[in-house]
Length: 134
Image (cartoon, rainbow, N blue to C red):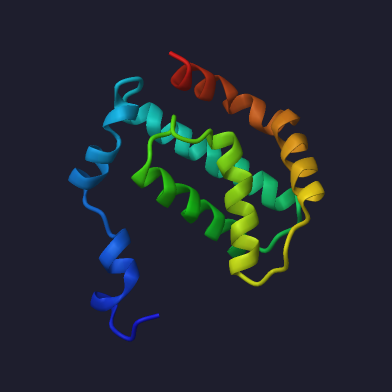
């Protein structure tokens, strides 16, 4: 971590203005509007939260996973990599980075399957299906 914010990698790489974000989202905006895009971001933040709670992770790990998810899709289209696969990947990486301990693959897959089939995410599923597959 840099001692000076203006020299930090966060400032140099991840403080993006609206023009940069819209330029990167042009592929996604062909299929959805900005409101639908943000609904998807909220949906997957809720999926990551539910996944982290199911795995009994600290909130710091869950928050880091959400940041990784949003940073990835700030640079890439939602169609480049399926967000359903990216969400557990972000949780796995965040658990390593935050030194929580590595989550085993079987526990992660089991938790992801359980969360995706649970009623918590069903109430948001229509937004995902409607926005992604049109």
